[in-house]
Length: 123
Image (cartoon, rainbow, N blue to C red; front, side):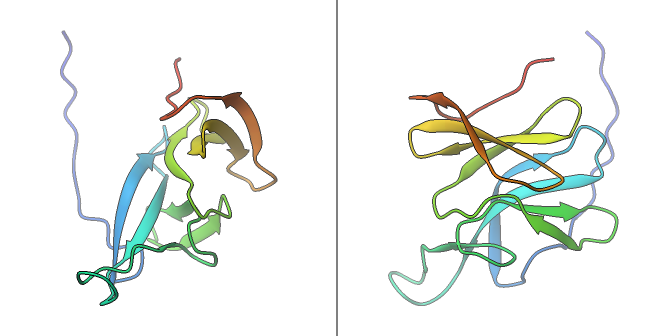
């Protein structure tokens, strides 16, 4: 078994009143995709509506070096489990009862599987 040393640092991107979840790091470590939920006093202290850069429920793409938002990859509202392709050019994600993909450069998501959940790429 090979053990790789990994340096872990805090990433301060995203709104300060949000919790990021379903986090995925790009293969080169330059981009991160996630879904966010905003804490708000609505029900039990939380507003369960997901939100991102521009649209509620979208999976957001951030630049790691600058902590700046790049774009929303999806329009939501229930998109989750982003997973980068090994080449970093696409992200698979769960939407409803299926798996979809979208290019990290932007574009329209495409359904690739029905009745599937929590996508992961193989090399």
